[in-house]
Amino acid sequence: MWKFMGRSSQKKGLLPGTLVHVGDKKADETRILFIEYDSGSYNISDIEQIEDTVLAPDPGKVRWLDVVGLDRIDLMEQIGSVFNIHSLVMEDIMNTGQRPKFDEWDDYDFMVLKLIHIDRETYEVKPEQVSLIIRPGMIISFQETEGDDFLHIVNRIINNEGRIRKLGGDYLVCSLVDSIVDNYFVALDIMGDRAESLESELLKSVDQVDQKDIHLLKREVMFLRKSVWPLREMMASITRGDSSYFSEDTLKYARDIYDHVVEVIDSTELLRETITSMIDIYLSGINNKMNKVMKFLTMITTIFIPLSVIAGIYGMNFKFMPEIEWGYGYFFALGLMGLCAVGFLIYFKRKNWFD
Image (cartoon, rainbow, N blue to C red; front, side, top):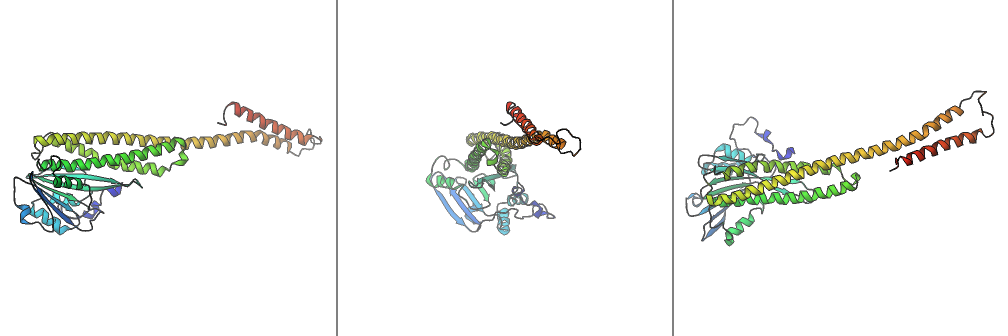
């Protein structure tokens, strides 16, 4: 779990607002994608520096600046200076262990989200922090690594599909958040299938399941829950109209995202309870196995105690013991021992102790 929390100890002793990249993920190269569009046209280009065309205001167009790679401190300082983003906000952007949150500043809103990927082979959660700066007609997104999670949004802009070219930047924000929430459903499907498989094997035999697999799945579900719960509060704040950057037409889509977030939370809680019950089943199965072993040892001990008593009595070397010189004494002792053993076996059988 600690690998998901970031390494904030790297900032020990530094002033608040000092830009330090905190995180393990680094992009192969920093890339800045600039997308500008309206209902009639669009323009997409990769840029190496913030040009005047990016900064020039144009009320009729939506501008989206997508920054991939957070480890170049000089570039992040430039972006913060050019777009007048507070140093504390830039610090949170570069600290990838942030809790999802929504903050309002003087001339922009700031949003932190967790993009979740899951390995279908190892079932390991691979989180990525996505930060958004929201201004009227200008959206700046920050990603840790290159990916195709927002590619379908870019394709919708290019092909003029849906409402994205007809509505403003607030709708673009909803599209980005909705894409992140959709990834939660994918992760839940994979985790749910894994939990169902483990539960099926567990009910057959606890020997078929490794306890580490259950705890690994529980850990990943806990992180997913940690990522989703704050998002509910964020979307609730937006749907209440706390932000001035979301129009009434866009709030209906924000409410739909809120419903999806609630659905993810419900599914996560159900999955967490399922895994908790699996742990109980596993521990109960281990205890049952131990009880069976103890029952078997108890039966063996119960059978051999009277045999040991008989052997102990006839093993005494007193001179005047009865049957000490009897020719059939040996066979009589063996028969008595066998009779006791058979008697106990019949008793255990009637008590169903062999089941």
